[in-house]
Length: 228
Image (cartoon, rainbow, N blue to C red; front, side):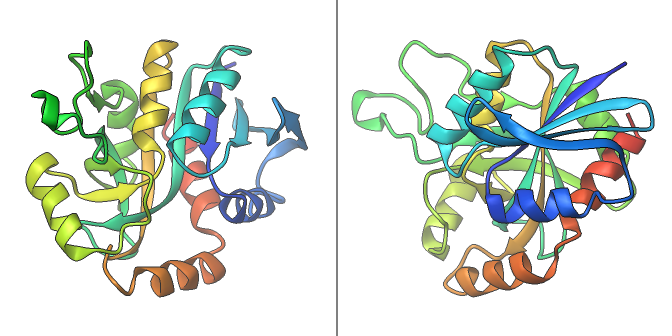
């Protein structure tokens, strides 16, 4: 039986995700995994573990590493809200082609934006085969994801990130998760629903979507599992 890992940052995304699975999956149970809220279920012969690791790059990297070190998975899928940067709009579901840490900056030492010392690969590609199967879900689009430890509301910074990295959407976890999964050789893809336009109205738009679109993530994940 294939076993997939679903990675979710925010409890306000994880709880509605779990609630939205009621009656749609089998063998559902909740528990704690490495001090993180978790749940197991099966869906059409696929075993799934989902974990809520906490917001931000540090929580994402340490949470994913702790989980991946303890288990064996055929793939890892991240989902959550993202802000639009270019070419996507509120309500779109974006499958990541790649992820990059937009806020990592060693340019004073002669490195490119996002590049780390002694690390050639700093733009992390999502797994091509897994991403291809996920992109096949009707209505999904795809593009490049940027990550940073900020809630992006500044249109000037958003435009700069697009110019520098060519990103389409911005979140606070994808690149860290992708890096951790590459370390453990687990295929990874991030699938994000666009909640806002990464500008000065973002906070209001984000809160509105988070409180009303409660079926977003169970619908996304079950549609993905149908294609796996």
